Image 1 (cartoon, helix red, strand yellow):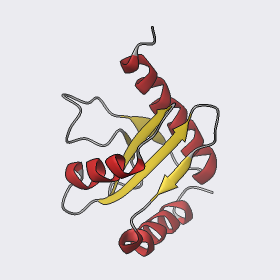
Image 2 (image 1 turned 60 degrees about the horizontal axis):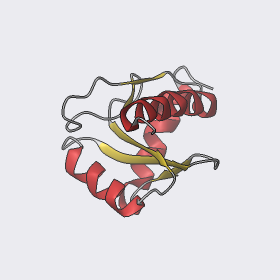
Image 3 (image 1 turned 180 degrees about the vertical axis):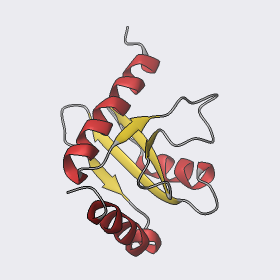
Amino acid sequence: MINGNRKGKAGERELCKALANATGLSYRRTQQYNGTGLSDVVCEELPELHIECKRGKVVNIHKALEQVERDRGVDQLPLVCTRRDHDEWNVTIPLKHLAAVVEALGEAMEGGGK
């Protein structure tokens, strides 16, 4: 039997590496309590992002988007990163937040990333 908690942690660590490779910025897992409130992954250069990580055989993107909207702070932008087993990582951003996420990411990368 697969330990879901351990698999979730492994997925978050894997996502941190993938995001770092893609952006040149530093990412880390957060210590969550009861699975709510905190982003799964944070980037010191992008505190305005609330990043949710979902990895598994089946990923329900709609539930993940509902969770990120529910858990994010008032001033945070939602970002959902998903990967089905044996596939590549994908990023989902609600369209109304796309421009703000792209702008924040570009500024962070110019300031010290790639």
